[in-house]
Image 1 (spheres, rainbow, N blue to C red):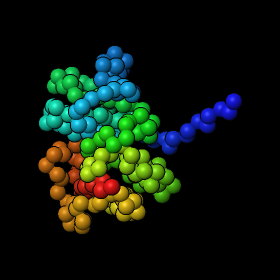
Image 2: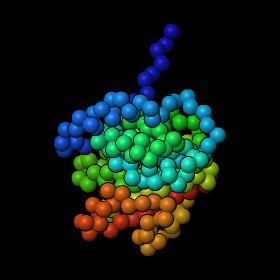
Image 3: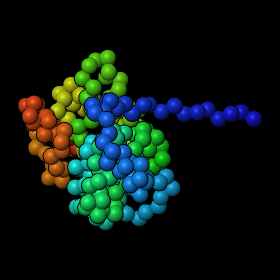
Image 4: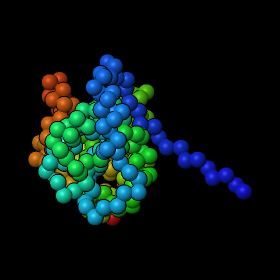
Length: 221
């Protein structure tokens, strides 16, 4: 009997935490996180939104508050951010958020085909050094994966303050005929959409004086 080949998925790279987790953060991750974990075989009739790399969870909480009848899934490997989100979910008593604290690509393998209404990726790590470009999340392979889980006419929201990464993102989407760039030109991308709030990472970009770009794509087939 032949052994099935193990599928090797790309890594979700994360930078080292600058400081150790506090005791409170450790308790949140050890005891409280369990209540909000994503379950593979879940079933729901609700619309599903997905945020990949939610950072400290500001936008995810905002989505949860404004879309109480929808299910919001957040994926992140940065432990301080996960602990912060758990705390905010409990403070706001939200019942419509679940967390996947592991590799992004392993989550995409678990999600059902054509099940996601909207995908949010706010300030994904640009990995600015050329030798680290291979670590960037948005690639041909990644778009093939989200194409499978996103519904037809489903939307993708992406923001970045890296002009180099912006060019890479646009090229990858232009090469995939299943997606349409709604904004059509860069001058339409300077204002944050109303449905998004200013995150901690956006505030950092503003403090640095970086230009911020907000992109929107639609799955057309």
